[in-house]
Image (cartoon, rainbow, N blue to C red; front, side):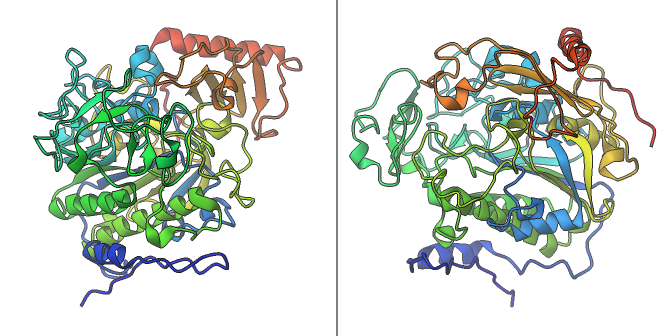
Amino acid sequence: MRKIQLPRVARSKDSVNRSITNWFVALLLLTPVAFSSAEPMKLQGKPNILVILADDLGPGDLSCAGSTKIKTPNIDRLAADGVRFTQGYAPSATCTPSRFSLLTGEYAWRQSAKKNTILDGDAPLCIEPGRLTLPAMLRQASYQTGIVGKWHLGLGDGQTKVDFNREVKPGPLEVGFDYCHIIPATVDRVPSVWIENYKVLNLDPADPITVSYLTNISDEPTGLEHPELLSRYGADKQHACTIINGISRIGYMKGGHSARFKDEELPKTVVAKSVEFIEKHQDAPFFLEVGLFEPHVPRVAAPPFVGKSGCGLRGDVIEQIDWEVGEIMKALDRLKLADNTLVIFSSDNGPILFDGYFDRSEEDLNGHQPTGGLRGWKYLTYEGGCRVPLIARWPQQIKPRVSDQLFSLVDVYATVAQLTGQELKAGSAPDSLDLSSVLLGKTKKNVRDNTVLHGIGGLALRQGDWKYIPATEKMKPGGMGSGANAADPRFAAATVPEALLFNLAQDPNETNNLTAKYPDKAAELAKELKAIVAQGEGTKKTKAKP
């Protein structure tokens, strides 16, 4: 009989007993075996590739990275068995551009503004169908490809408004995935539904879905007009549209009541569909991207995790992330796939506390530091906005260690291509570097000597230990879209009145502007950034010798 392990309920001084029987029954159907890898592993010629991407997770949010408050034992195990990069970067401080870069190997800022912003839930697909993406490249190498969880790269052709009552396409299946089980955008944006391949799940044809980000097309209450109906916490104006599951969202949604997800059930769905995909394709190499929803807003912890972290709701959902990772790892162990599976765990951008909902994430922080002390947060090109957790485990090939070498998510494409024996075609993945020698510990040098970082205020350049942020113009009203206020402190900080120059080796928290002291270095990096943008060929692609 298989051993069942369930998440433990918090027993802190302030915790109270909660009824969680129904949730545990659901978990019994999901949890296959204890988290163990003692048995011999099944080896395959090509490694399975599993990318787990959290949403707004910071470099200081993991106990393996120094958190003394929030506990992440399953992610810690990944780090202990693999390589943890302390200089891991998301290409952008916002989600859609980073996810674009991961799948295309190209900086999103090279594209039009519509592909370089935070997309709404009814935005068109921002990757051209037929483009050779990471999953499409792997599919050519006989991989089965899938994505579960957050998508946020648009749906539809942009010529006609996407109709969620019919086949929703083009989407993931047109850019290289064989299977998808996704929500269209972020959890705080409508439509609040699951889409499997081309169909919205559990949709009643008699109750069709209509979505608008411009006007209220529904007679349902909104958070702005009826804040008394918000059963969890209040929201700012941007997040105060249609109320779904007691939470007001960005945008307006009418209909589709039977298809609407419940926030507290999202994690178990992600686990179930991920494990199902792995089980189905255990005998052939697979590529699976798992887009976790946490700790992005609105933050909702499932019953076993409420009050568990001691760091408020945001801390609770991070421990929920750890449970999701653990359950997926159990599946690899049970199927004897772990030894020859490359697992990459990271986040699409840095952390943020208040992000539209008054969920006490700031008040209940309890001394925890999501950025690990780095300056800035999500949206900004400071280190706190773009530096992210980055862990890779492949027991067959990677020796456990901690590395301070540069590694960006844009490099996953070229690195995986090398590891799987695929040649990059001319023009594909223009900004992605093959960092396989870094990943496998065959060199101690920085193969990537610079990386361009994107935020809502513009671009920044890190080169070696130096970081250069150009002066930027004040963000215009409406620059964030969907009703965001440009004067909001979250976004106003993106305005940089004067150019900034930092030496990250001496000043990792970016507190001392060195432009006056080293004007030649500032001018050099400004010229380099301009050249990278102008040439359209990405960062230097010279190979460092191990």
